[in-house]
Length: 129
Image (cartoon, rainbow, N blue to C red):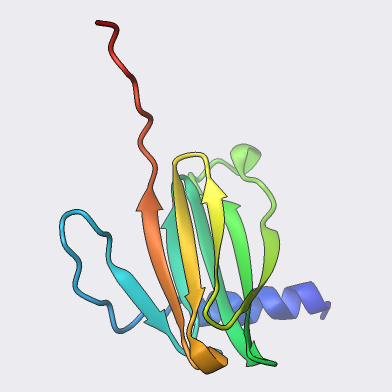
């Protein structure tokens, strides 16, 4: 079994468990999800679907995600998944962007947890006056 196949199977199996510990959110601020090391995450970013996990190493969060288009049942329109690796220093943040949304990740002090926040992008159209 190749490394990619192993990673994909671990991520997909782990991704079945939804993020736990959702924080309360107001209408202005989307919910933030707190993830522990090696716990699976799964979410949608715009039209993309993602599964992954993170590890804690050298005071950094090392995030691994597999991104793919949502499966529509038509194998001809299905694209190959893409693996994304992000290293986020403790106290810093990073993001994964799609055309119509973003996932923002923040690594806690000591890399003991990772906070994920989904942000929907809405196009702004200024009306002519």
